[in-house]
Image 1 (tube, helix red, strand yellow):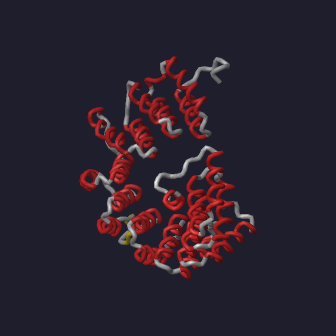
Image 2 (image 1 turned 60 degrees about the horizontal axis):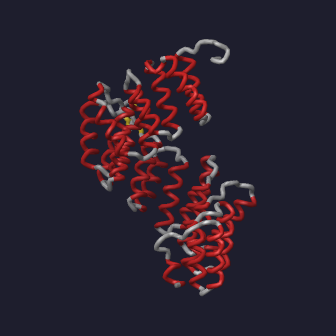
Image 3 (image 1 turned 90 degrees about the vertical axis):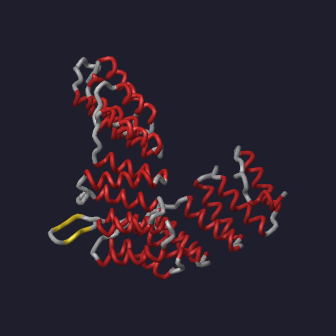
Length: 370
């Protein structure tokens, strides 16, 4: 359009920048950025927001921050675009610093800003500031029908270790439908995640059952949490039942994360042969969801339980996926050391040396073999 001398308007520029973000074409985005500066479009708050959003979504957060500082007209949407970049990059401190600057820039907080505040507090375990945000939300915002903000509150308290407070928020959360209160899957998975991260595995299973009783359809995240909880509580049969119910009852295709949880479930119970059989059945059926975590879990269990043959097979499959994964070499070396296979350990060291890899500091193979 521009090369044919057709003038670009705000809509065309914003659409081009959004498209660049969608296809992750940062080079085109930078060209558009240069045109924006030369043609004076940087004074448009809409174009400025689109530029910030482009860089933030492509993880060029410093470029997004530079654009935010340069644009003469700012609004909350611009700030939220940059804030989203900070939060996704886990730059919690920079995110909170931007939030603190917003009042001085005459920028109001909206629901997205407040949710990002809570995520930053969770990331930093900044419970005191998190409580202040909760107080502000209670006074200034109608949170009753904002499930995203409610789930952010639940997760903030959970990541700060205040499980009881998270549950309190969860019990009051939801959308009011007449006299009834409805909690969607986002709220349920938030609370399930809080229990799981804090080691309340029995509570995970009980809450999952309660969720089903309320007629809520579980999603993939819920299944990961509840199957993992079954593994930690030794409930292999129940965990397998939940796994099988994914496709049978809810028409959900298990992904790598679900198979990894089931492998972990079986390995924790010492059922390595069943874990190996499940993986091979999965591959034979054409499921392309083999993951490094799945093979790593199986290898780790073999190292703990001294299953040398199965461990070697698991390591081979893992290294096919990630031949430069140092952790796999360390686990395999520890397995070899358990059986005093020093020649094999030496061969592993040579392979790592050829590939320019260094073992993790503190790895147990150092103490065993030197």
